[in-house]
Length: 260
Image (cartoon, rainbow, N blue to C red; front, side, top):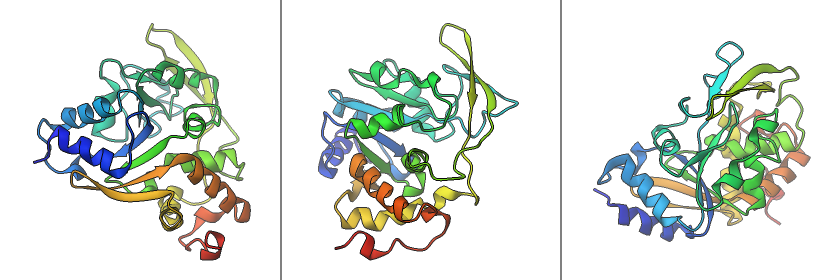
């Protein structure tokens, strides 16, 4: 059984610093038994990163659509895991106002980080939270989950202007704010020429590990990968300049693209 202090030591051992901005994609069960359960896991992250910024996705793309079209900021559950739903309800945690790709943040400048998401009409705008991770020199932790969960790569494809990744048309979505107002937010959605495009995002793993942009280790029992956001984005941009449709198949990225 792992303790909260065990998890903190593992965070440090993987190379996470208390002052970091850290985005976490997570699988609770991958951690194994933790004394105190899911809340103790979140305590470990919040306490360790107290001077930094802890960010978890609280996406709702799976259920918000043109018919069920009201994103209730306070009540709408996340579709990406147990930890994300517990985290978004914690005291001091703030959730961004994005109707399909919201995040929740905890830290001294959480309000500055999450504000303004209601202004944008794409899933991962460069000026929004996903782009701010790049600007802040953040790290992203894949806690017991594969790189197929890498929402940031959706963002990179969007920022690079890869064709056929964002719908031309809009869904007429709404945002229910904490004070009960309803804001209209027409939203373009992710699209792709193939189903499950993100299943191919894990082809980045080998280049990222080879170049030292990613490291692998364990947190509790969870085999985890920690990645530096800015060099990952820059490398992926370069790959997409060579081949905009890089992620449409399972072919490995050519070694000569990243090894001199």
